Structure formats: C-alpha cells, structure tokens
Length: 142
Ligand SMILES: [Zn+2]
Ligand SMILES: [Zn+2]
Image (cartoon, rainbow, N blue to C red; front, side, top):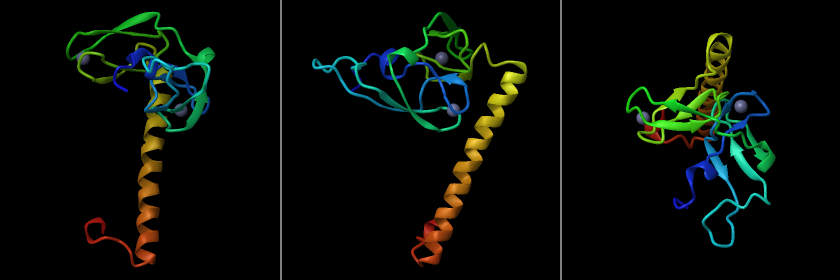
C-alpha cells in the first residue's frame, strides 16, 4: 500500500459537508491491476480531515497542487492547492493551516475542527454510558 504515491492516495478535495480543503484523514480506494496506482475509474471513499464526514470522490473532485507550502518546522516544500485550508508536510508530517486559512476562513476552520472534536468526545461519552448501563464498562474506562 505504501508504494502508492502520496499524491494519489491522499488527494486534496473540497469536503461537501464543510467546504474546507485538505487531504483526507482516511481513504478507501481501488488499486490498478499493477497495484501501483489508485484506480480512478472507481470512486474513492474519503473522510474529511476537518469535520470527519465520509463521502465519495472521483477524479473530477481532485484539486490541482498548484502551489507549494513551506513547512515552518523543517522547511520542506509540499505541493498543494493554493486554496488548501491545511497542509501535511511531506518531510516531517507536520499538519499546519494552509495559506488560504486566514481571517474569517481560519476562524471557520477552527470552529469546524472544534465541533468535530466535541462530537467525538460526546460520542465516546455516550458509548461509555451505554456500556455502563449494560454493566460492561471496563474498569480502565470509568
Ligand atoms: Zn468536512
Ligand atoms: Zn516539515
């Protein structure tokens, strides 16, 4: 799997739910027959890196990496869309806000990310309550 070029297995796309632009936080895709590329005749199922919404994208949803982001930690220049709200460094993996994420747009991104985190926290809390109700909550989780 790791032989697949990162540009192919982590394409930039605009989330249909929140509208923000970044790499997916998860991706399920079909491989070409030689198993070295993503088969774009099939849709890719992606999870939004901002709001966690899972959607399907096709080759027409891919955004061109028309600029470069210079990492503030290691200086590596990562190709990305100019409109990216987040960029993951190809050198050290640092996940930083993109050049487009300024002003109101940065505030919106922070709100979306905070909302996704709170949703995840709330989901864990409900899961614990359910487990407690069943008498099945492990000691380490209480
Ligand atoms: Zn989203
Ligand atoms: Zn870096």
